Image (spheres, helix red, strand yellow):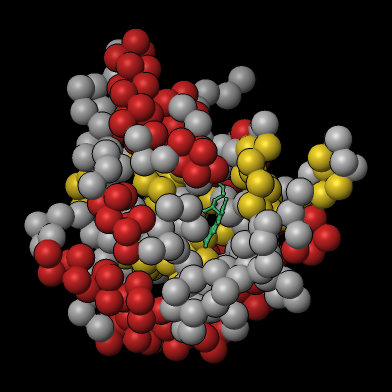
Length: 313
Ligand code: FMN
């Protein structure tokens, strides 16, 4: 039996990755991911200039997941591009790196994409249109017109493989509308979902919020978000043209959760909150659990069940 996964013409030893923003801010963290059992890994979403992000405390583990309002702290575009290029030089035989960007404006996104296009970077770029935690900046992918405008400009300047990180949607009309936009472009994949934006968690002892920015409002991850994540993976898997692959992110804590994302149609899966709680050893645990589930169900490869969710007639 094998967990090998082919994605965008590359073969990965398994479909597991970190989710951008978790364990990928520094070269040290990225190095730990590179040496972990993850099939692939992605860098922290970056902006052209480095950012300190929001005031702390800005992340809080809760029993059913996490709430955060990091505000895109990152070490700046050049830091991650330098890392990516040196990683590629050292590991020419290895799988491609995923490189996440999240400009504060369309102009900044286009500028970063042009720099990646002009560089020797051979990996896969992920454009994050869904950060919920920057005060004053709405999540771009909730503005359908602005997303369509941006994508039209992106594909005039960018020809390397590009994925789009989406926020969760909650309405069939929105799944339809976004899929219609995405289907017009040579997008390599969509990644669903980013955090569910602007939840509120209250500490019952002190009657106080648990994070400082935005009076306690923050993005939710972990167990809370799995049903929404699965719904988004499934909705886009059934609406997007087959050339656009899906990365499933949200609420993965064990092999069963990963299996369900794959069953809904994900090609790769990413882990955020639970990686934050458990560290990189999680990749070994979840690959083992996924392999056991496949064994019990008699599957030799992921392709035998990917997308094959059963519905009631
Ligand atoms: N998503 C991004 O695309 N870029 C980021 O920089 C980013 N930063 C995050 C930082 C933290 C601390 C957390 C918890 C999440 C962040 N996310 C970011 C969202 C995750 O990548 C992921 O989509 C979300 O947490 C849902 O996955 P989970 O349920 O496994 O946590």
